[in-house]
Length: 284
Image (tube, rainbow, N blue to C red; front, top):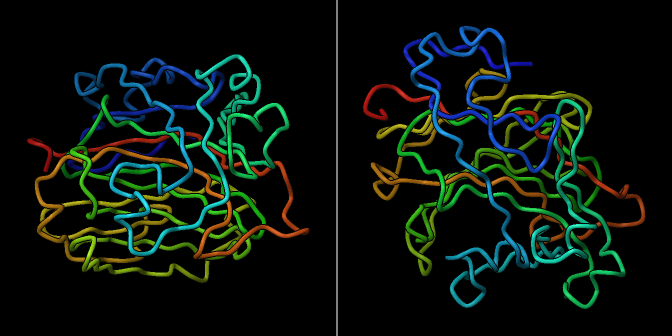
């Protein structure tokens, strides 16, 4: 399902994850009618690539090392880079479906035991080094995984590697499928501040596809669910005029939601149909 146009905004970047995964992002040829997405074909961007982030969850992402993070996330998965070796490729968490892709989390395959220290294997995709934006509307169409201890997220981090700040467009717990959280972090590692909003009263987010977005501007971060505003946070100074890159991941376990249990169904899939970035002129 293609996204509806946004009045006064041009589609600057769009990735469709159906058919091939990993795949080269589409530049408009995925839909015969480009006007259905954006009337100005000149705003279609070049083929920026998502890359794969290996490591042990948040503690392996620059700015999230355990020494600097006062609240380590204690995640139980390792992120698999499918290009690291033939063994990694054979157990890639990035799975192709006819009309979407998935990030798959599962107990660590025996073949990866000598490479990965964690008991679970999953995936994290980032655009760092290939695409970043400064202000705009960032949106993804996702289907969340179901099960205790599953922690999908769609978020933004500064391209310069600093942390905080951070914008969490969507974080959810697979054991509580009718809510998610929208959060802005700022301050310093020693004095971290945040404004977190639980978005409740929703349909089961694991049963169908939904759109999660932030309209990130110099004054406000407005969070949207299926194009309806559900939360507003004042943009902290650290996020004004700062370039950020995109992340999509499926964590397992962690201090926030706890570990999986015998009821957690594996493999667990975070479905991704598309991700888009819309901006006004001059990126505002």
